[in-house]
Amino acid sequence: MVQIIIQLISGAVGGNGAGALMKKLSLGTIGNSIVGILGGGLGGQLLGLLGMAPAAAAGGGLDLNNIIASVLSGGVGGGALMAIIGAVKKALGK
Image (cartoon, rainbow, N blue to C red; front, side, top):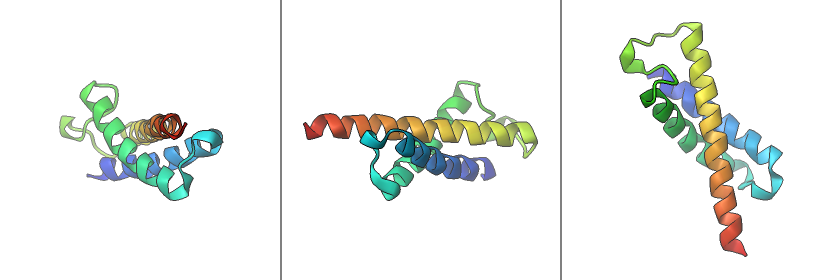
């Protein structure tokens, strides 16, 4: 459960980071945060299923490697989903 919370928080940070780097695709602070949270949760779970991030059910505890993997997977997932949704929104706006 703690890993999911870490992934969600990291996703929000990743979404806002991606929004700051890609200003034309930004959804605003609240939009970036919401999409980042969704992306962080989805990204962390998908990477866990693929074996690229520790899955909580696979005996993952709160050691440093699991925490770092959760932060990275959540942040990358949040940033990626924010970029995808921002690009789709921009394309539909034209």
